[in-house]
Image (cartoon, rainbow, N blue to C red; front, side, top):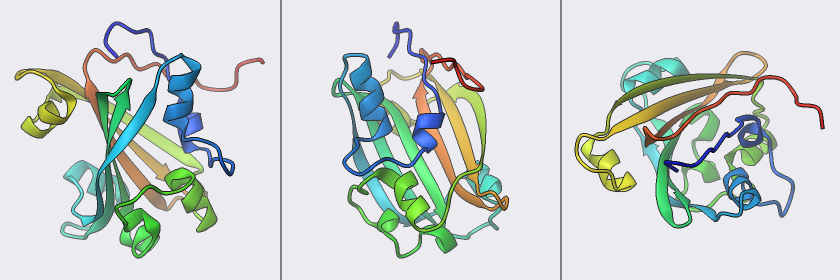
Length: 181
């Protein structure tokens, strides 16, 4: 998305979708006259990176459900998005299966009784790993932004941690509160 003025809000990505409604990314891209999509790279049990494990409050070695997606804009990779769920939340659910989840993870989580009430996002920058360069089609030495988003229930229980990796040309803007219609 380098060179594009692309301001994205987090709220639509945290709201359950209505039946038959597309995913938030596809809708956002379409509003801008673009084509958004995603490719599921992995879904199942795995280990979380240390930062995600700590965010979820899990002990070392505890497995999680992982959903890894490559986010596309006009068929070009623009972001790696990995979502991690405690096994107590997502083990044995469609989130652990390598297929599309109708309505998306947020919708399924709501149906299972998990609704996000608090979101904390942390952004950092660094050099892309070999795998990140390969998926995002970046040259060696490329910098990336890493965003970790932790979602907690109203009771304060961590229900999902997402790690998003995007080329450093991306511009992140956060809007708090509601705009007048």
